[in-house]
Image (cartoon, rainbow over all chains, first blue to last red; front, side, top):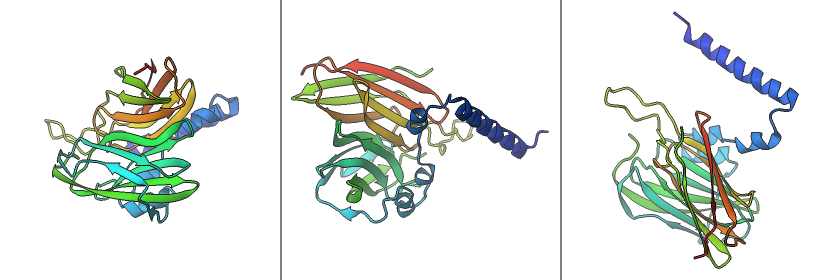
Length: 156
Length: 105
């Protein structure tokens, strides 16, 4: 029988080796490395405060310039439509957080000068909870919340 | 193999209203199949939207985005015929890129 921990170590070593070789030979372009960014610490946080900390979003200020469009009552927690509009000038990033989900941070959207401060998507929610939209503009964080009641949870 | 995305971009003034539908299971890693085994996590982690090759939206997602994800955004300074490109990458390294032109409303 193969010891599973040994396999993991070998796998990790292999991945690091490949990455190191890529860097040396210039195969890994810096632009590709940026495109594949994924905030593991933030997405695996189990509390909203930890997720915000991992994103450097400390204590966002509540703002009336962020509008969240979501149903008051969602029958199916597996598909909750949500749209966020930020009227704050120089909006750089929009985050969606469902406070009571097992992993509260759902998505981050980096909006550049080429797109408006608007995103819409569909999310899964386990139970009735506040949905927060956090907006980064000029390096400061703002937030707005809306409660969505869930009839049937969508995590399982 | 990943299924093609549906991308619709319609012009409203000088803003393109872009709607994207991706086909992906977005498994949370919490669901069990009919045998009671946990279905491993399988979800889109990165989505990038480009307008004529320039990135206009760079998203990172968790497993909590719904199955067959929908993404809507508005691209400024668009003209009919401009190219809207979308690329996603999931946690297994699968990726898919599709492109669609902006159509006049």
